[in-house]
Length: 143
Image (cartoon, rainbow, N blue to C red; front, side, top):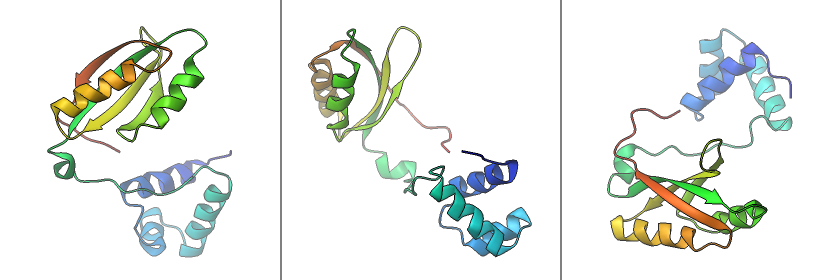
């Protein structure tokens, strides 16, 4: 995948507002609308842009409990654990990381009891050795 500095600026604008019109993006980049549309089409074809999503206002999730759940996985059980976590809708993201833990999951639950139940379910997955959680108090920014 070849991404130019111009493509990077385009991607940054789409991260800010993926619903911005091609004409708006073109004006901000100083390019023609046709050029911007062809770059977007190329980035989509190449798989650089895989899709578009909705970013919710923090207030929308205000009553939900969010936590980073650090997970240590037993040797040779990574694929099994990842498949099991992918089946849990409360696990919004899963990252492989370096350091004392193997994975970090972003868990979202309706209340503390539901988060406790989620961490218990994660801990019970075949191949999970241990978990440690950190409740997210606030998000300072997100891109």
